[in-house]
Amino acid sequence: MAETSHEIRRQIDDTRTRLGNTIAAIERKVDPHRIVDEHPLTLVGVAFGAGVLLATTGATSRAVNEARDQVKHGATKINETAGSALDGVIHAIVGAATRAVAEKLSELLHVSGSAPAEKRREADARRRAQVRAA
Image (cartoon, rainbow, N blue to C red; front, side):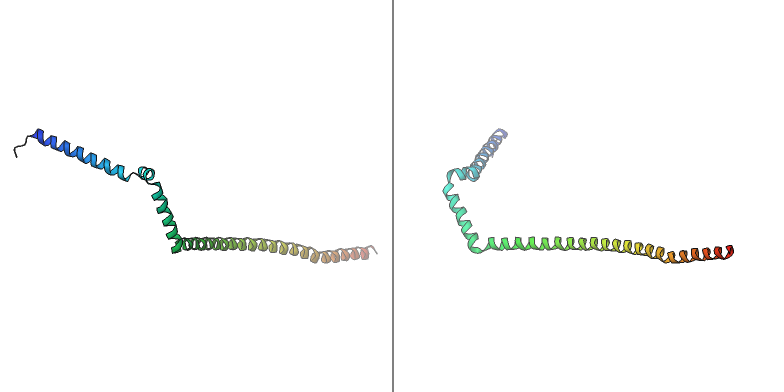
């Protein structure tokens, strides 16, 4: 128990060194590059087994079907939005064309409706002038 501070420091340094060596050994053991380099066939076998497992569980086909359904749903929403926008554009065009045709018809009817009245007035004025002249 009568250890000196120098001995305690030396023990702490020794413990640090041992821990550092242990951590370095663990890092070497779990280094993915080293594992691939030392056991390439084992990793190929594991990858093959995982692929077979996924293929037999149907997980991939479910994932594909789910992705397809999501794409269909998104396309349907886009189509509906585009359809609504197109309906709005068509409605605006038809409304503008209807107003333009109505204005033109109104102008034509006003001109043709007023033309006989003007002709009658002109004819009446000519007759009065003829009566005065006679």
